[in-house]
Image: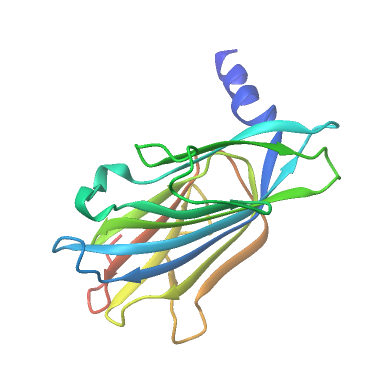
Length: 205
């Protein structure tokens, strides 16, 4: 019974769903970070759609990898977040001192439209290393795009758990620079893992 109650509260009774979830990735070397680290720029966007017969107010929560904080350089950081037509900059009270963006938003009733959400962020990662993006809503439709990466680095993408999305390599030069699956459904707690390795290094799982 306790497992069933947890499933209902965390998944079945969710009032909203994320659709057309898109992550655009850019990896850069940056003098502001320490040796063995790199700067990961991501733009995350999706449509927030209601699942109820009436409009609902829900809370949007986005988190940075705050344990990689570089205080003197204001990293990691959100560049901005846009919800519908409203753009939030880091001075807005929706951004906390602990690398969070928390905002309540009204979502239309089912079949009455959706609310677009886009966040731009800069994260600090270790290299070689991984960055994990944890989903906190039911998500339908996934697109992961590689915008730019140094020539000597390789990116592998894994969605955990998912049987068909394990260590998929994204490449700029060959046209294999994106993963796009329109009918995929992901649940809260699933993870999008970005693994960055030196290109000359043989891949080790």
